[in-house]
Length: 343
Image (cartoon, rainbow, N blue to C red; front, side):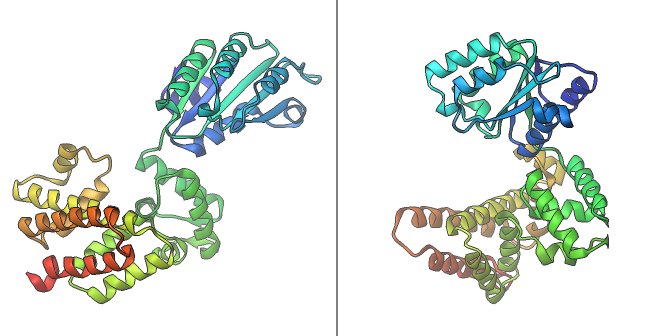
């Protein structure tokens, strides 16, 4: 059996659909861990009849022994092979696992988790998914959409005695990686800082460190505004936080590519939604940011900025320059090229 979304898997579990083996994999580790806990059960019975095995260093003999062992004064034993690294499985191991999955004792259930986002793309991973589907179930968990993440954050805030508006939940999603575990951790910090009651923008900005992509939009905004002092101060803060200059350059290049596309889209009379569809953006956030700034620069200067960033990327990766100093010099060049004073 194959489940490609959380809703269908939830429905199957709720309706009592059990499988002798269940493989949980995908790009959202939070959901994988959540469902592994649910499937492993809770209460006194699960304490004596559940066993966890390390999937990073899988011991196939230990796995077989665990599944063959009889449950302790219960009808069923559950075994978790946690965070399986399929790349560490030799051909003999894979063959042994195939035999195990084909003959799991009626008194046992096996739950396998694979938390690497690339698991389903690797040859061993694909083979294990096929085996799990053949002998039980494989459920794939991917990153939730923005509306679901907003509900997740608001519910999490409520549990901690706080209220989080939809707008601020979306803001938090915009400045943080779209990873539920990281978002949950950041929300915990925010609620602890806020104490209780309504969460404000100041509470979020006071404790959350934005991802590099979000800071790149801030850096672009300062460049377009022609503010070298503020731009270099922001770069200094990123260096202090040990952000990789190459990663900063990559995020800044992405933001200027977005800007160039938005300028071209505006000139062609396209909307935000049309541009997002045309270029395959998964979220409107980047497109809206680019559209907001597109009126501050001409198409020609946006193109020149993208070319300069491309050349800088090649120079930083192929020469022995000090990347921090080079990035500071690049920022000043971009301000001279397309800052407010240059227009």
